[in-house]
Image 1 (cartoon, rainbow, N blue to C red):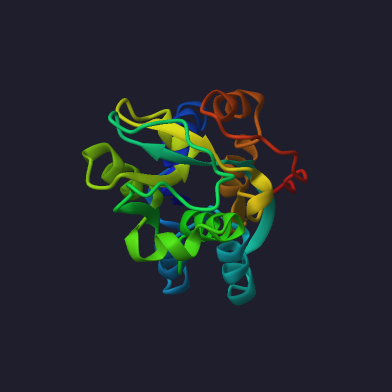
Image 2: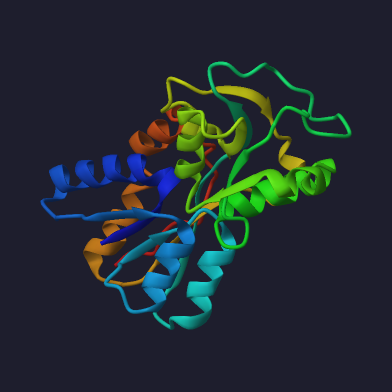
Length: 229
């Protein structure tokens, strides 16, 4: 049972299907926001692998569960500002104020969801947080923020760059410099030491899966070798 952050869900599902085909071992993938997944794990959910979208939620699990083991960072991502098909663009993030015609702006929940925390830190670094705060529309996860932009419910929003590739109706208005927020990473936490769990985790660093991550727009980072069973 693999718990994966919503922004990484599709590629982890692909990895699970490949692993099932080659090993005969069934893998179930549960996809949700990192904070939701972490709370479920801490409440005793039957998870073998946890892949959140930031180190804070990984550390929350590692601090509490004695059997949890950190494997390394699976991948990275980038933040972008997006708008719907009628949005003007691109925009200059170096300006002192956000566009005046943005009346509603979507970000993931900035108190709990990694994408929202990254977005808040970026907007604060740009000096845009205060003028935008009253216009924010927080969502349960980053995909929900993207959906609001797609539906035209908001004027713009901040999402991961990899989310945009799955949408045909939103466009990138600006790429947020990575230096404005903490590094966006997807740590892998192994919650069980059964041999099949270790084998699946090792498969996430196979050349085939690394290439899939690259094609989907994720940045791939080197990690420590997973221990043998």
